[in-house]
Every structure is written in structure tokens, then in C-alpha cells.
Length: 361
Image 1 (tube, rainbow, N blue to C red):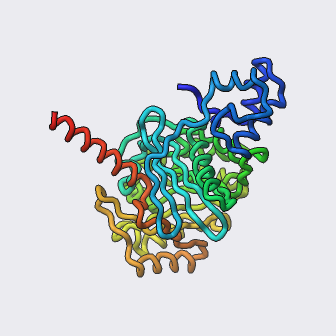
Image 2: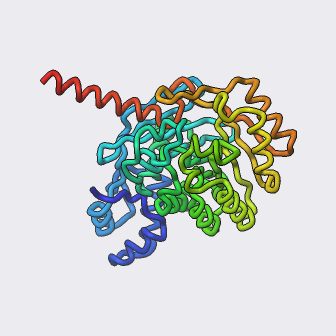
Image 3: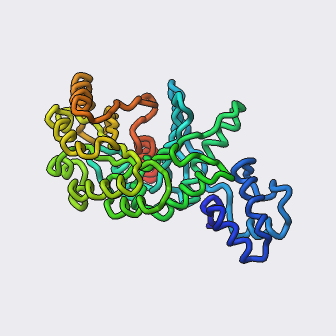
């Protein structure tokens, strides 16, 4: 399979072309056709010379993702199921906010983190996505918007889809540099958030990158015993180690970090856990924000959504302790809202279809 050209940063594309005898400015021409004019074929790049186009055609491809399913919610949220060239499927979600259009991207085919409440982890990781496959998710959503004729653009990105971004670190960083480049999509660094379940060594590395991309930590429990029960990764990187990494990140970047906290009924949603979370964050509350997330039930998991009263009590407890927080606005609850649900359903349907076909034969 040819490499996706979306996987190259502008510098990488420039070096690649120059090494093959092309002028340096050709890269900017190609870049403009890809990200501003958003062509689907190299032959549409009208001001690029034939030798350059031949090189690109021989080595790269523009379209590697095929849209399989598109579900649209009443609130305008759209969930896409894309098939990759190797037959694997991934999810991408477009969400509408009053501040703009945000896309949630996937970084891996499946997930090995194994959080007990998450639909993404039902199917184990098959492979990492390339940077090109991650970028193309944004491009496909933007092309969908272009086709609507409303001159809308993707303005925000959250890397919170299927997989652990820091487990695919190099491809993640190339993706971030591509979508942030001012000569292309020019999505502001402060409009991009990467969420990790807590791979501590990569949090240090991310702090040293010198980019202003936002960081979110999926914490979901305020003590090691509970967090290890619902998030296996805590056994490798317990809260003490995570807090040290966060302290380094805050000192290095002076940027606020978001703590994602999914509320599970009668598991982690008591006032006691709220108090423990406040204690955990008290020395860094000036640069912390807790995002409380109502749970989207998953058929294969036993957890339930917290009662509204429990959510309110948890929220108020944090606020009373000086911890800034909010309850996440829900999107797409009528279209397999939980991350990984649509993909899991589609894979199960395909398995059932193949089984039925075998039985018929």
C-alpha cells in the first residue's frame, strides 16, 4: 500500500521532494492543493509540474479512508465509520458547539489500555494508525462540510477517540504538526486537546515538545485502589507517579490541564470520592479543571449512569473546595454515543453475517 501523503509535515514533504530533484517551492504548492483547495487526486494540482506529479503519484495516495456509515444526531453531531485500506474500521465524530466545530479523532485500531467501562477497549488493539490516517479523518470531515456549501470549517480537535494517543506517540506528534501548520488547515494549538489515560513517561516528553497543545488526563478515580480496579494502566503508572508527571508538565508549560472524570453510579460518584479528588488536586488547582462526564452505558459493561443528584453533589463539592469544574455537555446520545460503540456493533454484525454465510454453505 502506498503511504498517505497526509502523513508528511510540510518540512518532511519539502525534504522528500528536494532529495528527488524538485524545487523547494513545489512542496508549498502541493500543500496548498491538499489543505486549502482539498483536491482528491494529484492530477487536479494544475500548477504543479508533471515530473513532480509523477513522483507523488508513484509514492503516495490521497484517499485511504472509505466512508462506511454516517450517523447524524438530532443535535447535529455526526459519527463516521471509516474503513481503512487493510479492512479495519475506525470512528470519527463531528460535534457542534457555540464556539465552533470540533472533531474527535481515533489514533489506534482498538485499544490495549483496557478501561473496564469503555467501549473502545472491548476489541483489543490491532495496530497503530499512521499520522496520515489520523490527518485524513480531519480532511474527510472537512470535505463533508465543504459539500454542504455552508463554508464551515473544523476549528477544534480532540484526540479522544479509539486508542491511547501516547501509545502511538510519533504518529500523534506528526499529526499535530500537520493540522496546526498555518499554511494548511491552521487549526490553532490552543484549539487542540490530546487526552491520555496516563502514560507517565510520554507526559514528560509531551511537556518538552514546546507546543501549546492542550493536555487532558483521564483520571476517573481519586485513589489507587479504585483507579486500578477500573483502569488497568494505573497498576503501571499509579497516581503518585502521574501527579509527578503533571507537576513537571505544569512547571514546564504553565498551561492548564484538564482532568476527565466519568461518573459511574455507586462506583466513583460519592461525595467521598469528590473530597479525595479535591485533596489530590489542591496544590495545583490554579492550573486544573475537572471535566465531569455523564456515563454513556455500554451493553457489554455493568456500569450505569450516575443520578443527577449525585452529579450535582460531586460538582458542588469540588467547587466548594476551590476546584474549577463543569459537567460535559452531551452530544449524539441517539447515535451510539459512547466511543467505540458503532465500531463494535459493525464488527459484530460482520461476524454474524460471515457465520450465517458459512452455515448456509
